[in-house]
Length: 347
Image (cartoon, rainbow, N blue to C red; front, side, top):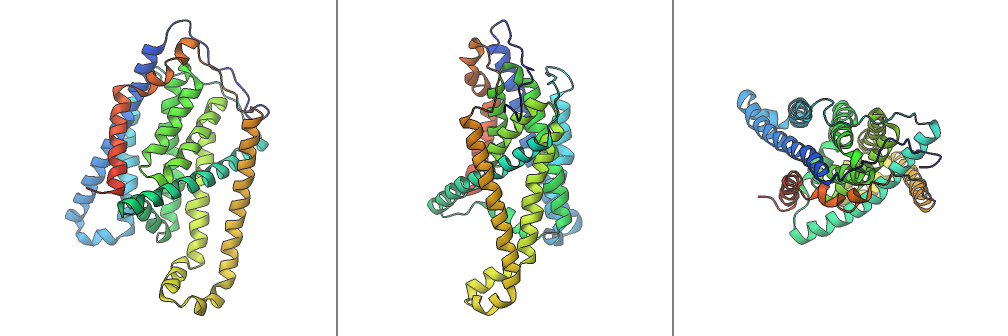
């Protein structure tokens, strides 16, 4: 963005037809991310079978068991394997580094809030429609909601607030963009964002995750500093998993729902009123931040503040085909279709 994230000129136009090596570069990253997903699924299956066998079925109700299902397979097994597969400096482009000013951090954070709001509205609406058509609620959404509202904040901070942003930014920003940006910034941003959104496996998270992924990809390309996108990702996750969920727990959200279901809502409203005021004040603050972010995004697009280096003509013409029509992406899409279908229909 001009005056916000300026062009650093890190993309040099190639002097030959790069579509074949472009397809190879994208395919190489995409099939490895597919393999990462398969390893996660296999490790989670093994974890869910092995621990009850070793420690008894009582582990099913232990909170550490549920969080361990995420931490061990995703971050301690699959990610190290992916890191080794991706390799070191081979085929990487070193993106020129630039600092973000304080004002740019504020703008980026507000844009994140706006993207989250719009994406959640779209995703929740689509998720509701599909759930009505299939007569099944999204298993991922229900599980995540129950986990967030009934969990220890220490686990949430460690897993959702710290580990997830670090690993996801390494995979969907650094691993992808370092190896594809030389073939065009827009396609690298699009692929980074869409793969990140689709990887969540449900519509309620897919849209805002894809939007955030593209914004983070743009920031990484303009600054060359992955820690910037990690910090922004942490801020988003901590706001929701710690801030919002913590206030919901403190306000007695579960108790409020139970009272509403039993018809005793008025009986507890007096006792809960101060907490509800705090809750609605928090939600109002988030709404204001989201509106400000949406306005900033509209202005940025209207005034063409987002600057992208255009790829060469011979790359631009077949860029999408090279990036998305290959066997690596085909494997990834097959996995995603399986994840979405099993999430809403089940097998």
